[in-house]
Amino acid sequence: MQRTKNAVRNAKSGMFLKFYQMFGQFILRTVMIYTLGMEYLGLSSLFTSILQVLNLAELGVGSAMVYSMYKPIVDNDSKTICALLNLYKKYYRIIGFVILFLGLIVMPFLPKLISGDIPESMNLYVLYFLNLITIVLSYWLFAYKNSILNAHQRLDIINKISIASITIQYILQIIVLFVFKNYYLFLLIALVAQILLNIFTSIVVNRYYPKYKAKGELSSKEKNKINIRIKGLVTSKIGEVTINSADSIVISIFLGLNMLAIYNNYYYIISAIMGLTNIIFTSTIAGIGNSLIVDGKEKNYNDLLKFTFMVSWIACFCSTAILCLIQPFMIAWVGEGNLLSLECVICFVIFFYMRVMNQLWVSYKDAAGIWDKDKYRPLLTAIFNLILNLILVHYIGIYGIILSTVISLLLMGSPWLLINLFKYVLERKLNNYLLIILKYVLVTIISCAISFAVCHYATANINIYLSIILSGIICLIIPNVIYILIFNKSKEYAYVKDLINSILKRRIQDEKSN
Image 1 (tube, rainbow, N blue to C red):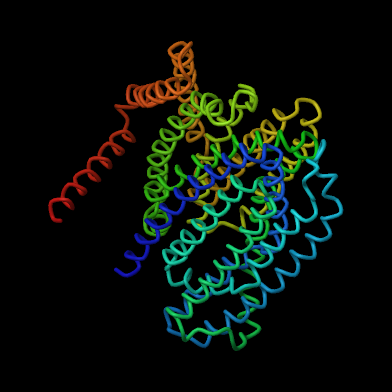
Image 2: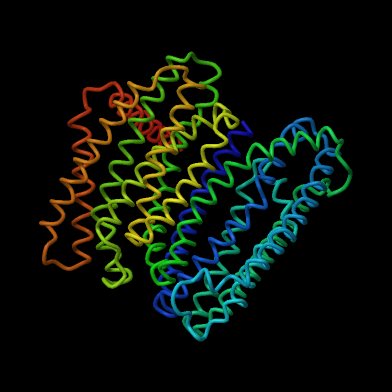
């Protein structure tokens, strides 16, 4: 009961934090665009990407350490937990020094990572160092204490502290942008906010868990176990970070900060929607791990078909909405001069659809624990993506960057993941499932094409804000009607219908009981 209570509490606070961050970052990006300009936003995106690469020094240490605390917490073994904290503290100090060292090595090459002119008011090295030291201090100042709250399923406490911290940070940064238009002060506020976040977290941990202090030593055997877990996460971490950061760095080098800012405006919206879709279906597939152990292969395959139908319906609806709404939204947000081409938008839609479907398959992979079988896929997919980036950017510019990500997922990332899933987890042939996926893809293409055509003709020669509202209504109706008409006789549709009805009945019962 306590685990369930904590899980629900964590989910609620985590969901609120995600929405809050999305809204806050959107406001902050908007204010930065209209007070400082697109070049500053592009520079901020470049620094974020560089520091994400430097953060590879962490290599999954946090995840491995939290996992190592689960058993000692169950056993009430305070001595081992204190020793783990002490090791974690040492690791994070080392990681901080490594990131600082690597960051200083990168510093002389910063001008080569930016195409075109840099605004005269910018001191590139000072701005970069402020970003770098913010990351370094996040490791040095009591960061290891987060693991205690994490391992005790008290992420809600971390989330509440984060909400308080970013509220103060965003308010002060918006004031600085409006009043002083000073990017140095903007970054100094982020630095101070990071320091305060770590200090407040440390105070809260000391209050809730005063018996845990960073002291003592683990045996060599226990240290080896932790190091093995860290090694198992290395390739996935490298692959994930490289794919997320390589595109931004390549755009900055070859196309400049302004184009990087435009690209990241689109990517920000796409990634925000991906985050929301992840929240929607991860709650539905929470029992996958248990089912893989308890139930037979046939039951698990049938469950996968149900989840695939649900996720593909969500992906179809969101893909249609992105295709029809993102350009008018961008016009209203940043103006017609900061738009990407329709070809780029289509590539973004394909990328979004594939990533949402991949989220489902990765959840099955993680629930089955086949990390060793899948460890090279993320890394090699990221390398393939980077090579394509460097080739295609010379010929088709920004379109080549987005297209290379789609090609790497389509030809390597997704097929490899599915092969591993069906070979090692479900132990059956992939052919029938691929035909089912192809059917869902065709339905999504039909939905996107019809909705786009209807929106194009329905919104011609009307106000941009009315256009967004009308297009939103069209996107709400057409993809859902298409899915219902085509699949209303299927077992998967019946499952989704029954699931929704049971949720609604439960909610009504809860309201009556309250």
